[in-house]
Length: 309
Image (tube, rainbow, N blue to C red; front, top):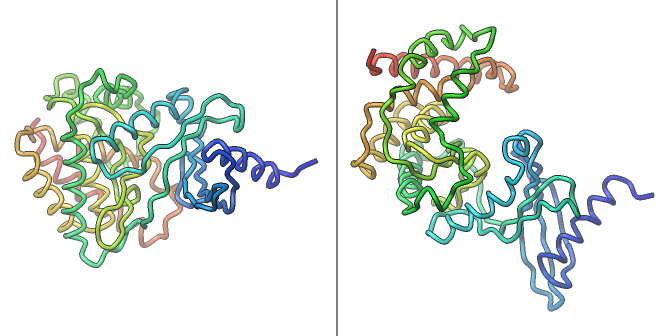
C-alpha cells in the first residue's frame, strides 16, 4: 500500500502528463506562503527533453465553501488578466472533476520572483505597487465578463452585519464599527472595476527591481477600487512605513485622477477591521506585533479624523 508521499507523487505525475502529453515529473516541492491553498512547484520534462515549470494551487475548504467553482473562476479571471497585459502567471489548466485530487486545483506557469518585505527603497517600491494596482483597476472590462466575482460592497456589508459578540477593543473595533455601520448603506461609490481583494507585499513577486507578477487572486471581487487602496494602505504602513504608504497613495491618485476619494477614509476603516480579534493569533514576534498595533492605531486615528460624521 502506498504511503501519503507516494500517493502525492503519483497524482502529481498524472497531472504532469495532463499538462505535457507524455511528460515526466522531474521535480516537485511545496511552496511556502499559502494560507488558503496548498501550493506546489512542478517541473515537467517533455518526451523531447524540454523542461516546463508550473505552480499548482489546490484550494482550501474555506475558499471552496465560498465558491465551489473557485478553480474554474480563478482560471477564467487569470486568463482575462493575462490577455489584458496584467503581470500575472499565465493559467494553463483548471480541474474540479475530483478525478485526481479531491479538491479543485488550478495550474499556472511558474514565474520567477520573490516577495519584498524589506526592499532597498520602500518608497520607490510603494510607487511601483501603486502603478500596478492602478493598471489592474484600469482594465477595460464589463461586469458581464466576470459575473462570478462577488460585489465588494455587498461583501463588506455582510461582514459589518456579522457583528461578533466580543469586540476587539484593543484595535478599536467598537469605534470603527460605530463609524461605519450608520453610513455604509449610503456610502458613495466609484464605478466598478476588477479588484484583487488582498493586494499587499506578500502577494507581489519581484525580479531585478521590477514587479514580476501579482499572485493569489482567490479573493478577487468587483466594485469600488478604493477597497483595494484602503487595504493596501494599511498593509504598506505595516510593511514599509508611513512614508511609503503616503507615496503609494499619491502615485495611485496621480494614475487614477478620475476617482472620487471622499470615501477612502471609510475603506481605510473597513481594512482596519480585518485584523480585529485576529492579530494576536498571527504568530508574530512580540516587537513586530507591538509595532503593527501602534501603526494600526495611528491609521485608524487618521481615518477617523477624515471621515465625515
